[in-house]
Length: 393
Image (spheres, helix red, strand yellow):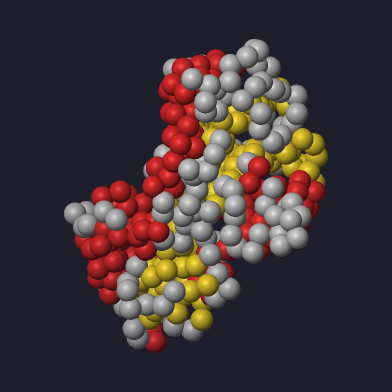
């Protein structure tokens, strides 16, 4: 096929996809994708990663669930296309957030998807974006990914979270939380604009709906103050005031707030009774960020102090909740900070979201797959000119 024919086929595919998806409900999206695939001579379908990032589940009911040790899982994990004869698997992404994998199968021997890599790549990006766009308008996509089994507490918190992965030309932010169906009191947030990256992690006390309510109030107050232009200390003061006023000191939350100057790499951070963040530099955990402190949010008390750190290009800063380090094995042994450090160093060469997936996998294995507390990670990476490993190839 000539280059002109190739381009024409790609345009027909993309046009069909956009026209078909423009007014599609979430459950109709797979039909639009399938019809678009036929313009290329392909059978195309979607597998979405579950919220616990353990399985790839088909949006087409008659397909089989797949593990992450399959060719589909390899595409998801590595962000690279995997080809096997007439069949190709490519990572499905919204921006840089991994949503699953896309399968394309040639309907005739002369239409192998592997021979049309650019069209495959465009498809993975556009279809991933369409999945994200239509998700809020129905329940099928959330249900397929495991959302139907959530507790009320988990439903509350998942609907407050930003996308699990975000990247600019200079910053990568990735978060992950477990147990995905029963999380009660952990949540994170971030915002990137005007040369700054703001991140925050909260852990409300308790393991029930009251814990989720505490965390949601803390997160909402943080967003409210951040959007008003407040600095970290003022954000912390208002979070403390709101929780104190509305719980009569009966409920409180720990947390970390941080702000990165993307141009200079200067990181300011504030810790409210939370585990100290960890700095990963050159593949090694360099230090704990312990030059900041104030009482837990909701208890009132003395003025906060903020810490400051000069990052170097490529540095990563990990925020985590105590459900990570306090996960226990059958003998009651904590997962612990040293084990977390070892995993960060072992997986330091992988992209940020994959690093978190691997860490959480080991935390779950340590506690036999059943966590007794929420376990949440939030990773900030300052990589001027980086983040390319998060794009499908």
